[in-house]
Length: 337
Length: 248
Image 1: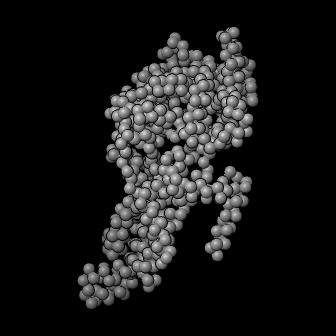
Image 2: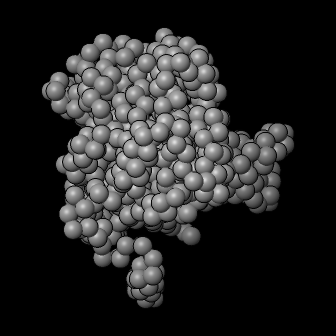
Image 3: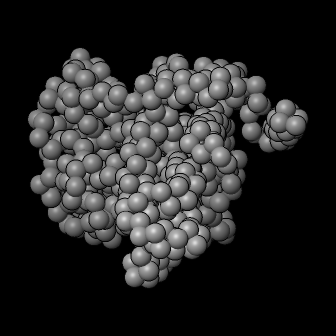
């Protein structure tokens, strides 16, 4: 009988927490979902706003289901986004070939003469309409290497938010500078960049290797990867690319860990989180884009109006998570889950 | 004996921790007790809050499932025609795991507000309904034929037969049905929470901890919470069975 009472009391305590409060005033309720679901949920009214990357922002805008209330360029200029990472940083030949192909592809995308072709590639890669792609391309900055200062700022945000479980010392680095030197591995990019500055048509030596490259489904930020394949940049340096598609960056980092891929295009957020928290030993050898995200709302037209609303982000500790936190803080709103 | 089992489990756990990345039992215990009433920084909620959210969903859905499964089970057991209609349907749908219903649930409930919540409740409903129905149906069908015949010979009204003959016999089925149904429902909700976002709940907690990374102890603490609640539910219902049916 005593035991029964004890069990009943425990259960009562558990149930006491059940009174689910509505979203409080001055608070934004955050939920996580994949950007694909966000577009759908915004239309159905399951969420009031979302923070995501392209082409999902433009998709919601073009379909008339939402409007942009703040672009990431306004909130956090030059914020890091997608990057190119590898576990094989010490294979200099391979890294040079990969970086070269990436830089060539990025320059191809950024060359206004290729606009028509780029839009076509973007449509093929994402499976979205011309209208959506056109709109999306306006907000993405395709880059060759991420702004290191902004990356460090992102890292500081992660630390402050309690997202990082390990210190760089535990990962075997003397200091944070040491860690960043290894993690943001710019040497090869600098080399490729200088070679190309000397001679625009420089091509590194052929490596004649098969390389497995991970990328995310229909992520327009990673267009350079698709262009590099289509324009034959990989074959020019003797790389046979085996492309592996992942649903999100977390899964792709798992792919790195399990040795399924050697190179990957993915978000800087999962790359950093899993690099530190789970010690997945990757280095960032190039950047794919910066900016290119936005806050899209159904009815609200300012951040202040998001008070008491439900907003979706792609995951905790992502750049989008911080974008929302930054504007919320400015508007004097609190974030709850 | 129980204590020996627990010690063996902990010993094995230490052994596995020594060779894999599984956190040690004491680390998990520490995380578990801290998170029980202190909110975890990423999601800002305590384990108790997450557990309560999951439990609330399970109880809602199971209540719904039981309120259909129990009467349906008893009536089908008494009425041959109905049984012939219902049992093949149940037998066809029962082997489909609740999780297989998730994508379909999203499609079906898409027009409703709160699609995710409704789908989760539906999935738990599916999980809880079938074991409960089968248990109730089986016990109710096995009411001794002599008793029924005797009651009929004495011209007892159907209502009395139901109350005094059938119900006491199906009580065992109802109680085990509830116990098993809740157990399956509990497993289903955790999985359903992992697939779609729910804002809170133990499955969601475990998934987010995995996504952010470096939080294996939190993951195992969440799993322990699932185990504790599952165990409590089962024990509580077994006690209730003894309370309601002291003759057993």
